[in-house]
Length: 360
Image 1 (tube, rainbow, N blue to C red):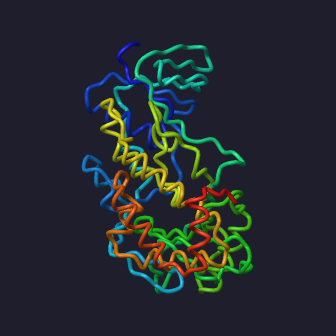
Image 2: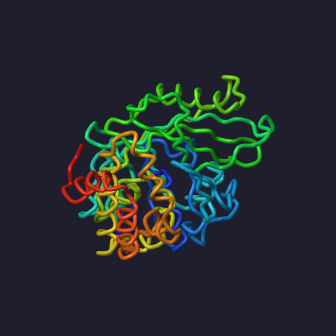
């Protein structure tokens, strides 16, 4: 097996790097206990994050100027794209790879060795894309959403990247959540109540209750028979380093939970044996982890105030923090501008979390 690229895990990150390795003419083996499992989550990205090699047919909807609500309304001058999840899975074909339907139980990326649950041993260049396991020590993002037919909505609500308005019935002192609303192609609109990050995060039953309250308050017709989307995953714990990729390799944005676009962007380089982890990229990742600490420390009623300051930044600053994987200067400038824009009472809280590394 020497010389092969061995990829453990066939989620979006693993399938993307396998797909690009095959496109480069490399011998590829993929290991996953359920290689044909159907993806069900909704994935989205800023349009300028997606790589040029990705088939445009995987985009289900493009929103030129999504809206964000914190204290006030903000129109975001940056195109946002919702992906067609089945189309994305089909586009990232692994035809030509050797597929092993088994679980990788021992993965040594440095020595290039994988042992499966069935006892099979493989050697080669190993990429671990198995994602992150849940742990009480790791902050998580949770969300509960429903799909509502667009032809039942008149007028149709705008696309909401984040909506922190307090009409979800939550107690003012309770952990906050926001509404995320995006079109899923021409047929459905997704309404999702989201806990951005928590340790522990809000439970799905609570998010369902808040979503129901919010939609009733806004006059959104709901029957109770709508398809449901449930989300729960860690937003911290990935370790940048040799052979780890996707969320397992630190590509998840700890302050937003986004990782698919970053994995797609980095897939070509990783397939070729390079690493996305330059010294600047590692420094940016450290700053983003500091941003997560700040979010976890904020008093619940101050979260909208924090995002009011963030969405008030110029779009280049927002883009640098949200997407500039190795833009150290831009990330530092964005964080500095955000800190300056915060009220003094919040600056102390944020400074303690960021500089002191306090874990709530």
